[in-house]
Amino acid sequence: MVSSPKYLSSITTNCCGFMPAYAYYGAPGSGKGTQGLLVAERERFMHLSAGDLLRRKIQEGDPAAVAVKEQMINGELVDDSLVQGLIRGELIALMDANPDAKGIVLDGFPRNLSQARTLIDMLTELSICFVGMLNLDVAEEEIFRRLLERAEIEHRADDNEVSIRKRIAEWRHNYEDLKAFFSAEFRFYNVDGLGDREEVYERIVKAMRCTCRKLVSLSK
Ligand code: AP5
Image (cartoon, rainbow, N blue to C red; front, side, top):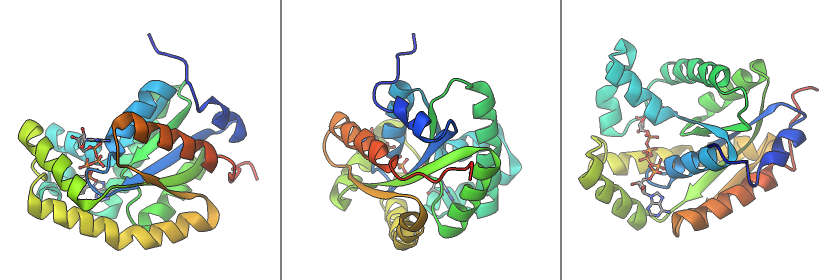
């Protein structure tokens, strides 16, 4: 049985009836996926992970995705137009399949300015209300601890020291640009990602409620 949304139901109202969307950003292992899934489960949000989508497309044998497999394993960002096209298609499919969803969390998208600008255009076209970006902040030592632990259990090909360093560097490289972009017109929040999952979850939903106070209405 699907539980009722606990904390975030007012956001839809504040979004003037449009579906609210949030982007989760952060270094690898900061908890974007874990928290995205929790919000999806507890608040009836949709969760769209760019990394999971790429990995699924590779498994399905999608030629464009298969072509970037090595880049992903090396911890490099893949081509913007590929990710943007996949995200757009998946977003439409998710909305069709989940007409009762209360909102959407974009996990790991956007990751640079070009993707950020495309996202806003895409959401406007789809009548989705972008609320803000939440950056999960976790110390490097903890990132390595989490990901090397996951490597032993899940054997994800990019959970190795070289790739983790590259992914951290990518995140650092784009952080200021994304912060400036989203702070200017939307919201950008740093959320402390250290602590257990429930503690981080409480901080996340609190930040999501705060971001909601400054909304860009798509109806204007
Ligand atoms: P992606 O799959 O998004 O990987 P990532 O950004 O490196 O992030 P991770 O999935 O490793 O970590 P996470 O922050 O989601 O943490 P998680 O919750 O899993 O992207 C992979 C690749 O795809 C990229 O490198 C790139 O090549 C490509 N790509 C993706 N998006 C792209 C884009 N927009 N543009 C271009 N290329 C793109 O948690 C990690 C571990 O920690 C888990 O084991 C979890 O159980 C544990 N954990 C979580 N929270 C806690 C906690 N509070 N306490 C203890 N452990 C915790």
